[in-house]
Length: 100
View (cartoon, one colour):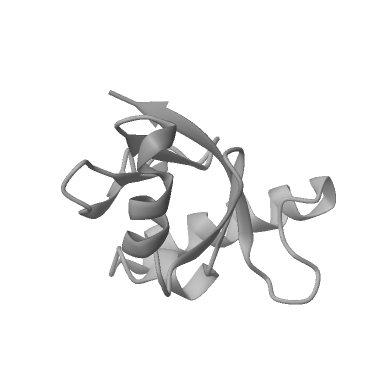
């Protein structure tokens, strides 16, 4: 799954049933970084042009389905030993890709 920020600043969850990856896609290229940071305020902290840290509860708010929530918990636990979950905040790290 991935979080998408489109060129209008709309934030959405894409491919939500794909629990084998987690990333941020920002449409428009690196020149949209500041606008993406603003759009993601309260959901994620963008760390340069490569990574963002997402609030677990913020991501969970996109989907109101207990089965999905359980699968997302499994994704988090699988990511934890690899350093993709912040040890203090529980935020989830996603790499950034630049969309068109």
